[in-house]
Amino acid sequence: MITIALSKGRIFEETVPLLAAAGIVPSEDPERSRKLILSTNRADVRLVIVRASDVPTYVQHGAADLGVAGYDVLLEHGGAGLYQPLDLEIARCRLMVAVPRGFDYHDAVKQGARLRVATKYVESAREHFARKGVHVDLIKLYGSMELAPLVGLADAIVDLVSSGGTLAANDLVAVEHVLDVSSRLVVNQAALKLKCAGLQAILDAFAGARGPAA
Ligand code: PRT
Ligand code: MG
Image (cartoon, rainbow, N blue to C red; front, side, top):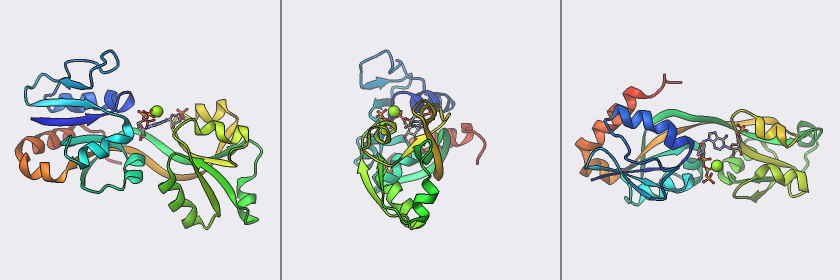
């Protein structure tokens, strides 16, 4: 049995065509079903539906053989026990520093100000501000980062941006690029040895079906 860990939403939707290229068709839509284990058209392949940030943990411990996870999530997890053979070029976005419209971030940095930065991505943020020599106090949040500067919890946020609509709706502007994000295939290192033939066929199909390499 091969177990593949996916999160609902954009990752699931953008992985369906890659699964199809490997001859794998989920038997149910996770948006409609409450089941957390989904069977597929193949008796030897099943899907498990987990939180996006939990995908690396399931694969690391071998509860899933394969998974699809955002690079943002992988950087926070650290990647221990994971083989990362493929950038799937899906669920693309950018990790950005954003501030309320009218706050002069670059001037504050130039003045050597100590900034309070709210984010879910503390590892990536810490590394970014250290590289830039910016003094920050990081405040860990689990969601709705956009709210933090609006109610005085933080001066800035580090969050994912795709269309920019969420920042604009909350009167925030992106002021610095941290990194480009897309989702990657992750594989349990032991499983790759034990289930080599089955997993390699899926890896090859995914590699052939993904978008043009960046
Ligand atoms: O939702 P949940 O708390 O369960 O977890 P999650 O938010 O990590 O999961 P999900 O499914 O929302 O995201 C899974 C992966 O998709 C992330 O790990 C990213 O790698 C990738 N991705 C791509 C995004 C976005 N684009 C994105 N726009 N993840 C989140 N967003 C959010 C962003 O945080 C912000 O709140 O969408 C909002 C901004 O979008 P725009 O279009 O308004 O700019
Ligand atoms: Mg989300």
